[in-house]
Image 1 (tube, rainbow, N blue to C red):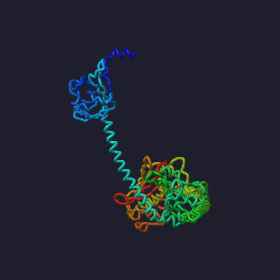
Image 2: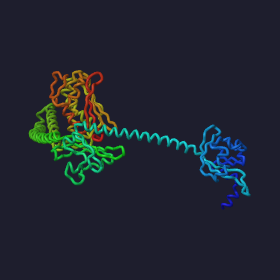
Image 3: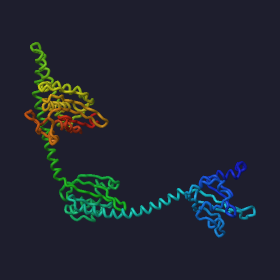
Image 4: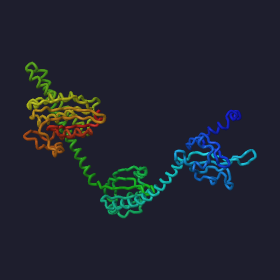
Length: 491
């Protein structure tokens, strides 16, 4: 098969299809043959090259010194670097193989050169050498910077009020700042787990494996040797050789933990109080609701339409108060009511609140403009409290201005927002944070009655469900209260 192929292709055809530049010269170094790849690499066609002395390529080295006809240099020459000038003036780097051409009697009749373009490789090597020198310089500079930084770090740690120490992978303490040694005594060179806890092996909670992976770990730990509780932050600290040590910074939280215990005790007492009040208030509510039902069932023929409406309202408000007390009992037990399975129709809820507030709304001769509200999956009793407080607050403080009160909302991919906007006297900027404090009443209240609890209640409900509330000035005057919940908690 190979013989057939060789017979099919002429030598000229095979030389022209080689992916390597190739040319032949006679004994005077005049070019006698020039293939297609040589044309592509140099830009010279065969017509432009054949017959010329090969030195027209301005090769380095060139002439007799190229090695082709130097008898002292054994042939063939393999992988010889060379630089020539292409037809467009560019310098091209070549790697070439060189050998004699001999006739049938072994007499040298010329030479052959086969070459490939190594310009890109040469440029890469030059760039790599340049980058290597630059990197070596940067490494020296960086090493000096790291050493200086390490010294500055230790100086900073020494100046800190909080205790801090550095421990190596072998658990030996490499450095302890003044505050650390003032609290625990001399530590440098000691083993941390043995010194702090008397353990013969690393502590079960040792964060060194996570720190070695580049992670920071925070813990709370009681140290019996000094009788204090500390919050520790363990962070990776890499030295100039890339070795990771652990930097531990202590924060004394003994007093804070004691305060937390007292606060938890106070909260338990408050929960007990809420449960007691809710339980006690259910007792009078049940007969109130029952009497309203009795009057409606047995005395309806003796009451006019207004009286019947009042009985319905007594029963409705009694049941609503009973629901609220039930939720307060649950809230005191678990700290947060479970969201309902189905989102609450807030548009319907706010319309009901409007009806309940029709007396103060009518007294102030104000209108409430309600836009469709996105539904929200939170307990309806709490949402009722939230919007009732905001709307009644707007009616009370801004209704006399005669402008409408606007209620609206919008939903995005990540959050859901609602607003209650009025066009009244507004709230001074310096008071906008304090108005959510319990019993605080702003300077614009005038003679308007109120306890200063409503907005504090609203903020508490919003915070229970990871939301936030704030107030902004309404363009043209007035206040706009914004409520925002993360969608994951409200969808």
